[in-house]
Amino acid sequence: MAALEATLESGWVAPAGPVPAAFEAALSAATGFGHVLATASGTAALHLGYRCLGVSAGDEVWTSALTFVATVAPAVQMGAVPRFLDVDPASWTLDPDLLERELARAARAGRLPRAVVPVDLFGQPCDLDAIVALCDRWGVPVMCDSAGAVGASRGDGRHAGRGARLAVFSFNGNKIITAGGGGALASDEPELVARARSLSQAAREPGAHYQHETTGHAYGMSSLLAAVGLAQLGALPARVSARRAVFARYRAALGGLPGLSFMPEAPWCRASRWLTAVLLDPTQGAPDRDALRRHLSESGIESRPVWKPLHLQPVFRDAPRGGGAVAADLFERGLCLPSGSGMAPPEQDRVIAAVRALWPAA
Ligand SMILES: *Cc1c(COP(=O)(O)O)cnc(C)c1O
Image: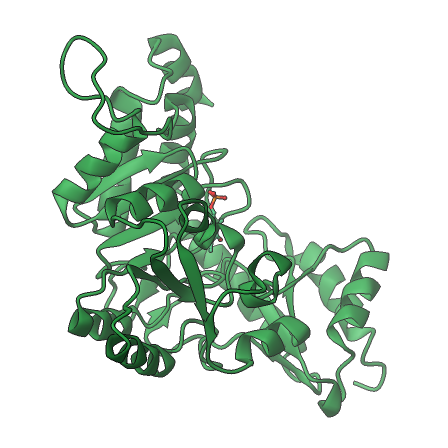
């Protein structure tokens, strides 16, 4: 509240000035990226990233099938063709072995993708080192959609997204920390972020009058939102601990239920556990995903299926794809439980009791 009031009183409220710059510097320090642009949303950052990578009509852009539509929506709006690759059951993120086969096939056909966009799922970093190494072999740039993985790190402590040419973060209201809406595009290459910054400000050329060599966007983050985001960044380590504690508590209370398992934590990372996701196996004694979701809903508890894979979305019915049916299976059987950092133990106990009620014998 104090930061917001001070920003309002300063008169610097537009997407420019000292507060967005301070937010960018703090995010750079928190993630280790050398250069950061604060944007109006994660989706806007993705759009700027696609423009910086030169995506144009007819290009292929590859991503994980198991993600939110915003990962590819801007590329599709630019005329690109998305190709959805299946995920690895050990991490629920893009399967590098599949990517390797698909890249080799595409290289033989002379049709490599313009960009590969792996996704950090529910706060779990993808196997980015393996993905970048594969893409480097063919000179394909990687933009990591780390929108839902602010605060997540890899085994060696590097932040989610580090190692990709571009990474995207989101500060939407549902994320682990929020600016009340907002995002960021990060890179270690100053030219990429400078280009994105120009495009985010209507692509106005330097000079007194309005001069344009291309058209841009109004994608900067307002100073008011940056003030909120800056204050929230200070709480990030505590939020990650709180989300991980929520996850650990669920696992301790529900881990023994027949046919119920948890989203695994990949060996290469420390997930933020933005969302706690469980997998139900009715052949092992669990109710099906929708029976549990409906039962929780009747108890006044919101839960939500894991992302519906994009290759199963009507809008992408004709999109090319690669791999098997892991993502589809995770959607059929996966459910995200209430995972808020502010959830008090008695609230979580209510969820736990409601879940357990569907295992009368346990
Ligand atoms: C939240 C999210 C986005 C979009 O971010 P917004 O700030 O809501 O535009 C993109 N991709 C993933 C994986 C997300 O979780």
